[in-house]
Amino acid sequence: MADTRVTEAMLRNWHDEVEGAFTYRELAAEEPDQHRRSILIRLAEAEERHALMWEKHMAELDIPVPSRGEVESKLKRSRHTMSGDEWLKRLEADEQQDVGKYRDLLRWLPHGEVRKSVAMMAHEEAGHAESLSALVQKTDPGNVLRRMLGRERWHVTSTSGWIGDAIYGANDGLGAIFGIVAGVAGYTHGSSHLIVVSGLAGMVASALSMGSGAYLAAKAEGEVHQAEIAREKRELEESPAEEREELSLFYQLKGLSEEEARDLVDRLAENPDAMLKTLVQEELGLTEDSAPNPIVSATSSSLATAVGAIIPVIPFFFMHGTAAIIVAAAISLIAHFAVGAAKTKVTARNWFSSGMEMTIVGAVEGAITFGLGLLLAGV
Image 1 (cartoon, rainbow, N blue to C red):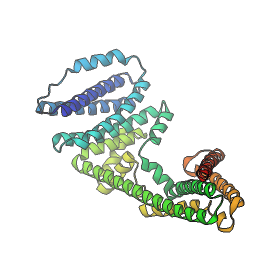
Image 2: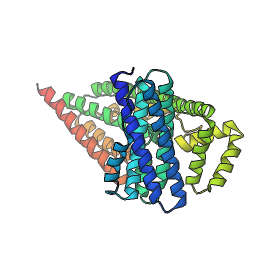
Image 3: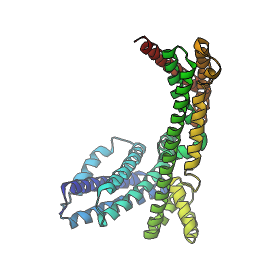
Image 4: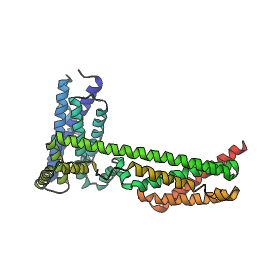
């Protein structure tokens, strides 16, 4: 017998798969393009397999299976409230949610046949989302772009690489130490000795903190990268026919005919390593060079943080008092603008607006901390 949590999860996912199968069949029946229709039919067949799989597991656990007629009748009533393209967009979002739901299930389901089924379905749902993305692209390219920008974090991280780590490190170091220097300057009225000591201590702490954070983040991303590849390899070994069919579908979505796609996949299948690399790249967007290097990330982040942090401190090596405070504020704000402008290398924003934004933030931060220092000095 299944507990309440398992029962609710099975019924909920069965319901979603039945809805998906019905909707794909309805859309396929209305689709005039033969290529798109064949893709929708295959998606319907996959959802139907998932629904039957849930029914099998529910029967094994003595969980009553609801009537499909009730689910489908509700869908028929709401089906004509949206166009086919609007339904595709909705289905694309649903498939992404299904992947998340199945992965959540894997966190607590015990090992066994049900868990194996869930892992397989999570993988297939990810492929369905990619297929729907290609179909939606013809009617709403912006939707696909938004989805791509919202995918795994390592795509952004690996693209920016050490340059991104360096820019954000400099940003953090400059912002944090400028605040410390301004605060201590306000408290001590420009005492160079205390400001230099505070600034250097803050610089070392910020650099070590940013470096260790960058190292751990890059290491974690690399581990996720390897885990995804290992999972794909296992699925290729356990279900080679399904993986070949999935890769064939990807190539068909890129414009190849069904025969051309199958021939290409058959040739790739002759070399298991090449097949795995292709699947990983097509489905997950991963390559051998896409995972960040923890050492490079930590080094670039630490050094850039230290460079950014030392800038507000430099004037106090040679000056003191009000003059040193004014010079430190001036070069710090110039550096804020430069770092803000440099951020556009990884954010694609307008360099001037990004630089001004960073300058304004730095000025506000400095004013607040300097005022706080003055306030504490007068207490």
